[in-house]
Amino acid sequence: MLSPEQVQAWQRDGYLVLPGFKPAAEVAAACARARAIVDAFEPDASTSRFSTQDRSKLADAALLASAETVRCFFEEEALDASGRLRVPKAESINKIGHALHDRDPVFIGFSHGPELDALARDLGLAQPQVWQSQLIFKQPRIGGVVDWHQDGSFFLTTPQTVTTFWFALEDATLANGCLWVKPGAQHDALREQYVCDHASGTLSMQPLDRTPWPTTEGSVPLPAAAGTLVVFGGQLPHYSAPNRSERSRLAYTLHATCGTAAYAPENWLQRSPAFPVRGFV
Ligand code: FE2
Image (cartoon, rainbow, N blue to C red):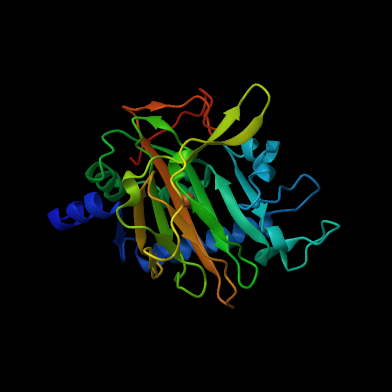
């Protein structure tokens, strides 16, 4: 799957950009399905608002309940003080998660196959296990910042193995909030861990290491045309800017760990025995 040069770049930089990984027809079908899920979604009082700047807002039952289902989450700026939508519903969604890859017919197809399996193995996942899928909307004008973080904070394994598969479903540019990474920083210590006390349903971010977060200085933006797959390791710091442009930036992500590593029981996302985690094929 990967050339020796690509494997070398992966080991050196901690990420790889693979343009044209998904054909245009598959990308179009995924976008259409994302719109259909939003169209069918009926917001109600229990709808969860999602703010990456205030992680305590994640600490609600809606997140935990989404582990095995398909659920919509709003943009922080989509609702006014009284909880009413300020923008049309279709422009108000921040993300949809977290079991699209095992529940939704279109995304089951998008998330599985021998190409992804071969790629995962080339990246070092001998026994890939796909825990999470997310449609991440960066809506025109109101799409929020996602601060610097490491995905390993949310999917701790021993040893650390979580790998992110980030698909551009629309062109991601500097103007609409593409990813930024710090090449080579995949060897940084894990700075924090998102810990769940499953008995009480309490979620909290625990500091682990004081290494400062990168800034855009010394980091690189990863503009990505629709169909591009960006892969990166769980300790690579990354960030994306707000979208103040008129163009939406839709992405789809998968998070996979290696089945030979121990998956932490305090990770928020757990699967019940009736709905076990599985691989790319
Ligand atoms: Fe991330």
